[in-house]
Image (tube, rainbow, N blue to C red; front, side, top):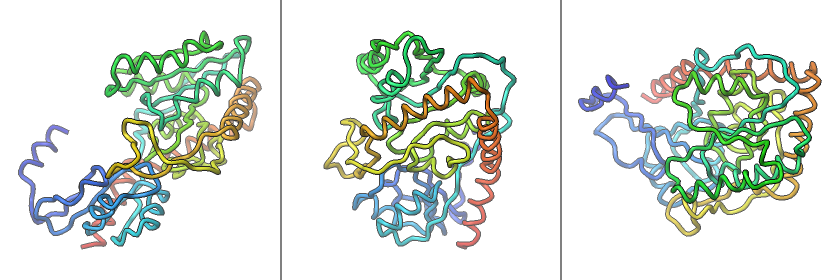
Length: 316
């Protein structure tokens, strides 16, 4: 990485340039012969500023077909191609673990309304009681959140009747530590309103850990009915968390999934189903885990790089 950063200081103006950045800042490039943008966004609408920037490109790359559809529906005229992201299978892989009667649900993602942290505790509390042999683990460190906001988030969980079954874990120091933690879980959970990609779910799949998540946005590129417990989304609402998504702004305007009563009920039922499947160690669960690993094998970083280079070559 350090070597690449040093090379970037003396870039060649004759080579294509791929800018991996926000969708509203793609107008400024070096004087290159091919200007390629690669934004990762979460909402279903693009603002005028975002459209102007993306339409100024020679080639637009997005990481999911969901994102490509959003661009098409928002009248982006630039050639748009899908370059899915990947997972490092040398790091994220299944590890042996002991059989147990307890089911561990793991949620990885910084404290944020978009990630559904405001409803996850409610879902877990509705699905189980303190008599059930289950635990919910959270890996939610948000380096942008003030200490008082972090405390508010934590109290949404610690003050629940089932709070004794919930663990809030510190940020892991290495990817190997994260891989070990994922392998201690039985299911990854992500009640997300919108995602650009949702890498933790793919990392979990590479470990053979099935996701419980919404059937919407970026992670639909790799989450399907054979490898995940999916929650159908029928309603949408204006994205608003008062921090990153505020109505009336010049960026980050659009809709995300509405996590209403029916959605929460689906999550509750999936949690209970997952716990039962885990207790039974059923063939169905074995098949889901195998499908997870097979899916992750399709999303290598070599595949990502190959697709990116092919699309650039085709454009020259």
